[in-house]
Image (cartoon, rainbow over all chains, first blue to last red; front, side, top):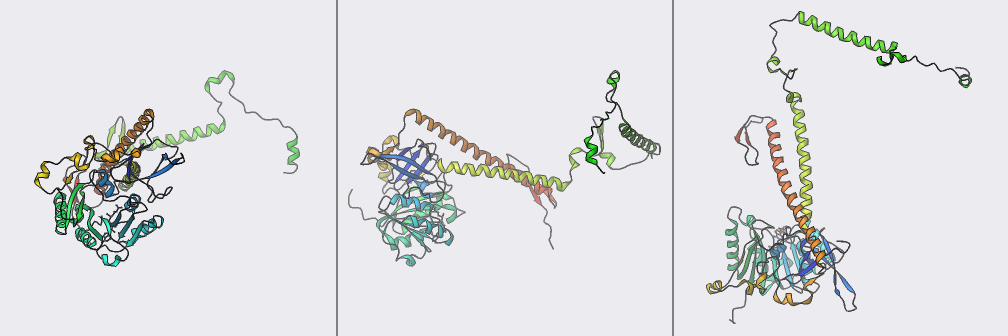
Length: 248
Length: 251
Ligand SMILES: C[S@@+](CC[C@H](N)C(=O)[O-])C[C@H]1O[C@@H](n2cnc3c(N)ncnc32)[C@H](O)[C@@H]1O
């Protein structure tokens, strides 16, 4: 946006995420590489609060399209917690070309880290190119079904985000959690009903997936569908091996 | 021609064509021989045609019959051998129809593209949520006492604002809202945003109706194609009719 168009930036419930209201009405993240877009998304410049010398800083935000990102759709759908904030370490399964990954990289900031796993080579190439500019992204072009292949690259993480769109997603997530997720860490899983079982009702599919997670020592916290951005999709958030309750 | 240039050097008298005398001006331009030849040729051609028609009429067979005669009709004094719409050959019409389809496809693509571009920045941030949010709790008792405002740690007034329920502590931090403009500017920006949403809605609606039109055109094109077919379902509420083709064995 040029010419200092009037924009209001509203801090979001989730740290590192914002709402921009101008001619647009958009979810945005603070661009960690100002002046550069990742996949042709719009950028919005705003005059920040004056710094210590009294000079106003320029802030740049990138529009995060919920029609293309399940995580963005979940945030606008009102998810309570995304378990990603500045400094978080996130394992992202099914990164594709890294559109969503780039926004997660904005959120976790320089102190955090995103391990982005993608299995196909073609989107993997875009992912690697994106990571060249964003040093907190570690691209891994491997099959998420074989976490042993990339165990040397990934440390313990706080959160696993999964959007692999595979019928055995629950198994992939628990396998990766077993290797990389700290106890009491969290998983955020996007479920596309038609990818798991195209004949059953979406609601039943989501329920079954939650059941599978429970069997793998996850404790579900919340589940939300992604209308109006996606049809028959849900995001489930769960805790991994939560510490036994002592208080309350 | 020798000394052509010398000849041109001497001024010559220009011969003016005789024009219609003023007294006969009402008869128009004065006819010259050239004009007469044209008029005579025209007259001869016409009288020859008339003579030939007269001859044909004189020798006409009163029992003459062609099937085209049954299709012919006289409309407003003009005899038509065939109804006007069948004037273009079948494959020519088929071609025109594909061109129509291409045009509609192109128009639709424009709308879809523009809508996508608008939608990238318009995220439908409205108060009423369109989705379903389930929170899992441990005991039945917690279900009874569930308080959304407390659960989300936000102001009770913001609970329905699914797209952003700021936490109480976020609301208190000074930089929570950046770049507040004056009221007049706010209003202008809001107007522009509303206009953009309206445009988006219209483009989406139009691209859908283009899609419907395309479906109809496709069916029409298929029907014009080869093969024996029958209608298995009538066209209804915007959907084109459904045809079924007879299976034909291919060698
Ligand atoms: C729905 S897309 C993810 C889109 C991405 N999360 C975004 O929002 O931009 C799913 C991706 O998962 C990848 N994928 C599927 N199976 C995989 C596996 N076993 N390991 C790693 N990636 C996988 C696919 O190649 C595909 O790019």
